[in-house]
Image (cartoon, rainbow, N blue to C red; front, top):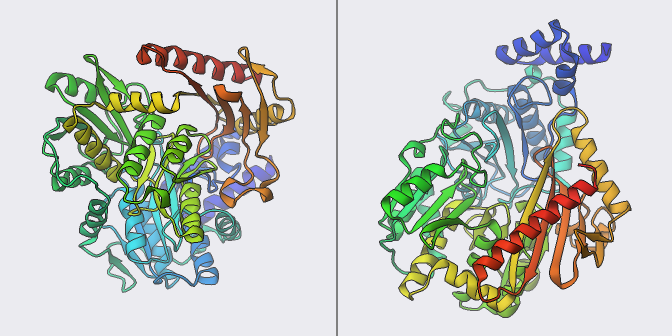
Length: 567
């Protein structure tokens, strides 16, 4: 206990931010040992999609001291280990209240380490930062964003010299540099670097958006736009102006943003959780679509790297799952590709197996990867280099998609455009989105997915979830809710026998024969255990009814597995 308070006082002494210094000092003075343990407990580390956490004082929270020490570690890694790239680091940030201040510290530490910085002067979508890193052949890129996390959070995302998210061993090497970093106040830093006029800190080229548009436009199969009535929401995020501009340039003239959610606001006043998958997040968009007789609803998460879609069905509105969007987009990309036999498509292991079947029909190559878009891109680029093929599409079930080669990460902006193009093409041919989905079901079987999440916050929560995974791997069930388990794959070991993008991870897969499969894993960004269920069946004479029945069964099986693990 004495050590806990000593470490807290040491952190306070080295914190350059008077707000968080005072916050942590109050916790020390009031002797709140549980809270102090959470703040001074495990430091934030790089997970599935960078580093994220609640904003607050201490190494277990997101704050200026953590950002400064993280950037110091990144700078040391870049100066000692990386020779590729043009020598600059691209820096961007979202609209959360602390994001610009954190980005300023990132630029200040990098510039003080004699590393040039190219920054976006205002909040910007994460895909545009990733694109700039590629287009400018940057040494690296940093985005300050918590994506779709709760309003209290913020995050730190890193791209390497290949403009893709960093993976092991790079993230481990940077983490080691962070661990050995001095206190934040002892790290050299240029104050107010984004506005100080430092010779090493300058804005990204003014034409970066035009270059992005040119590459996105080159992926389109459709030559024009449409008059589809489209309701769009960025959920108070930073994608609104970019998406409206992209759609306008493409000729989709009927798009309108939800007024209450159109402008960036990192406090997210109309939603409790700014994730388009969350119940209630799209209520305003649905109200607007009903009142205006819209043809389509599209939504991004706050940093615009994810895409959600809702389509009309028999006078109502039906959200498409991430897997349904992914399979529809994957089929659209392959169907319109000039040489699908040389195409490469990739999906994460927790995404629907249906994309592999679609790829097989076009003689395209499909790869599956660990969770995290960093692995999807890594697989696509590596197989592309090894085979001479073309990585044209990747997706993960959590609403992440990359279309073409514009961005080496998920991109909800270009995905929104290509999905809208697909809907317009279908309408031109007298079909709907659900007509095409039904066609895919008839060809490949109806795949239905469900996800169960169990959250354990507070000290010991993550360890409890990991013990549940251990129990599942050591003693898997013979059946789940009456469905026989026919095989078990434990991804915790034997990673050397698989590609790097399918290496070791706390992930257990239960095969259900030709009926589907189940997977369980801890989240890489939140204190959650996630259970994924993918069931396959014949769509029958009434696909809508069969889909509903199968969805209920999948959800029940996910809950049954979680219960069997004591969660």
